[in-house]
Image 1 (spheres, rainbow, N blue to C red):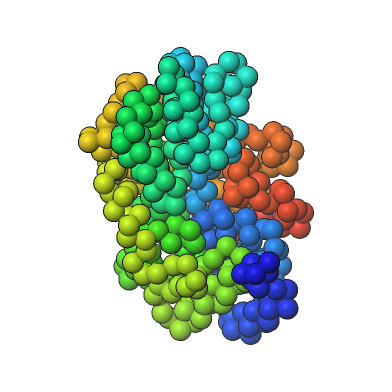
Image 2 (cartoon, protein in one colour):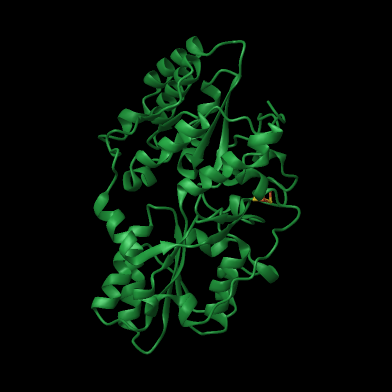
Length: 381
Ligand code: SF4
């Protein structure tokens, strides 16, 4: 397959592995966070850790959209389906995330909720058009990549007079999450999450561009290399990060030049800012309340805002105490540190959000057998 197989070439990967091994200094450790769940998935799937020297460690970040959704937000969606009788439309992975009272969207569907899996927000618009007598709510989750299509759908609904369509907006923002990680006590004060640099998101960066990461490189002295989701992209990005660390540089570099520019997709950015505005605060699983880290629908499109339309009030719900998703999303723990991993908690029977989506760290480790010989994280390693 053109433009995919070239980025999965084993021989080239071995060459990059040799280059990394020859450039790492034996007297130091290199700890890099891959922010995105897509990178976490690629790293597990293609065995990237097996190609790295032992003193280069990858730390999973909070960039899996399903994983960071807190229980309270899923509860809101469930209540809309069960109590308000709406047709609730959402992406597949969201259906299986455990919520309060032993429920999930899947289980709420089994209890009679009209909850439908869709591939795109346009499917939800079609359902609204086909059922003018029913209220249809799209449960919108995800980072900057999935936000522009939601903005387009809201504008289409307005233009087409689809008054039975609304959106439960849970779109979140990448730079705020990176800032939260850098400001966390584990990174700043305790040193339990040593961070030498970031692999920057691929798809998110096609929308927001490389510019927003400059602040982290300049202010926090953390190198950022934006990388694609193929294994050679990741290996190349690690080599670029190792070089920056060795040379004492901290800048934003773009490995994913085939898709990411400095300014990003300005048309998509304009659309998003026309329809959405920043929320003062939003709860993330693992990170807690993060200021200005999510979007809400602007007053001008209030008719399409499910939170306003149904008078929804957010109620935070604590995570299952036995589940370590919160610590994993902050980079404090790895999947194999959780006592439930692979025993009580599996992709077929997820106890936490990180075991649901293929981008979740627990699911990625389990699916590709990365836990079998993985050592537990050493604190401060
Ligand atoms: S293995 Fe399951 S219970 Fe443990 S942290 Fe991962 S998702 Fe949560």
